Image 1: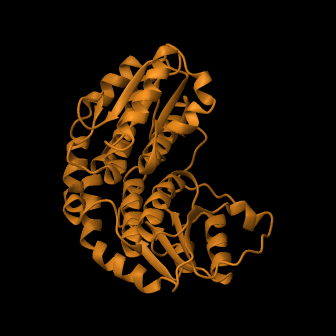
Image 2: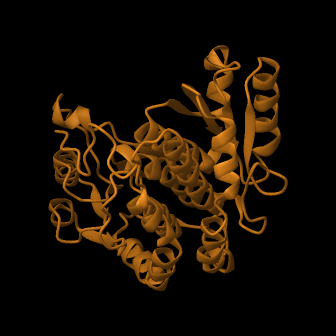
Length: 339
């Protein structure tokens, strides 16, 4: 059992976010200068944890721009040779390493099809960075643990910067400036996650649910649990859970809801009530009196970032409880070279 690297990189997140925030205005202005006129929409290209950050970007981009936002299906380009007109579209490609071949390929093809391209990467000399017209560097430093942590929360802040270039966002600058301190508050308080992991020790499957921008945190938490423990955790919209998958909930399938306050809290409380009636252990990650508390002052849209950090803590604690090494999960590598 180790976890030394993952724990250390999680602890770096407040500083990484604070450093990124010093460059945020420049990123916003450069994206704004690249935008097509008129803007038809925004599409995000990613895999893995970066795809979860892209889900966050989809919510914020559509709210900010009033134009459609979507997640690209890379296989349409790499396997099926789809011919799609991307004129008027902003294409945002995310990859911590910037070395996933299919993300580079899709970015180049969508640019050739008329899209304006932005790469969000930690390695600014990577193939993806060279493929795009504009690069937003995360500046997170080397990340050696296989489960991505500090690069994921930096990606979340980077897509928030993209959304700010598109129009009004559901948070103000004061809340953004306070975010590193809010993340530090969570990082410095791992005991709630340790306690929940102890109660849920032995679970072989798990649901993590949210609504709206917080869905990104639910998806990323489920992925981190799967990566570090082998437990089959599924991240879902609370609405999608009620459309069938809740039938799989029960005493051996805990359910974690992640909310950042209104407008999703009431709906997620109802999901938890239904799961509890089916005998499922339930817990909440959110502001106020929650098993995994989040800072009360963080607005819902930015709580996706603090909620993601809580999810990292839970995954780490579950892994350590199983006697596993979360730094190097069996069969996984830092860069996944999909085509």
